[in-house]
Image 1 (cartoon, one colour):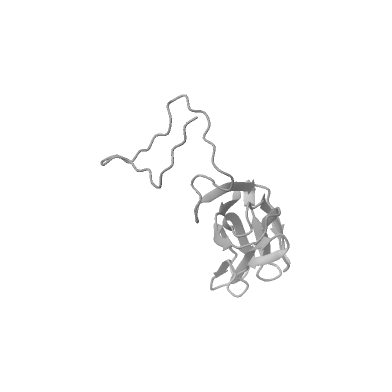
Image 2 (cartoon, one colour; image 1 turned 135 degrees about the horizontal axis):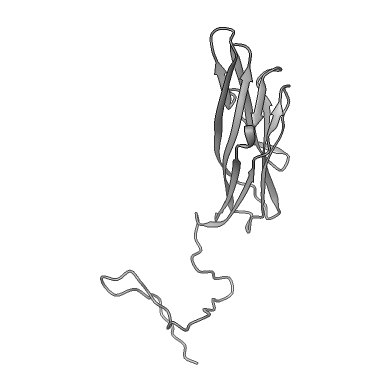
Amino acid sequence: MSKLETNTIDTISGSNTLTLGSSNLSTINMASGVSPGTGMGKILQVIQGTTSTQVATTSVGYVDTGLSASITPSSSSNKILILVQQSFRIFQNSAIVGGNIKLLRDTTDIYNETNDFGAYMRADGSSAIQQYNSYCLNYLDSPSSTSSITYKTQQTPYQSGDEFYTQPSSMDSSIILMEVSG
């Protein structure tokens, strides 16, 4: 067996491809603790959760929307990028109607627009108003864990009597979790 020792391997001028071995090469062994392509900011795994089961609420108080996904980070220094697209419908027979969707890591609130409400409408007059829409949320979390973590959303109407639905009429909602190397 031959051994090659060098500080740098580079491509020839005008080329951006480096080939190791021939077409029948099946394994490249790396020294212990070395992994190819390590570096900060790389996406290490992607998990998706979806639901189309309608959840309706009419009284103030957070309840699960049924949208969740679990991920186990490979290092406690890695971050989790969370992308949520949650379909909803709000309805009320008055001038103001709204609701909120918040994001949790296990049982801990990590993103909650309690002051502004994520879905909110005001209309002058007394006629019924409703809105179908999607609530989109992007959040970068630093869980500092290598245990399984569940991310989920919860919903509440703005005021009692508002009808707040997630996944109305079986519309799809999704949550995507991406582990980003730290």
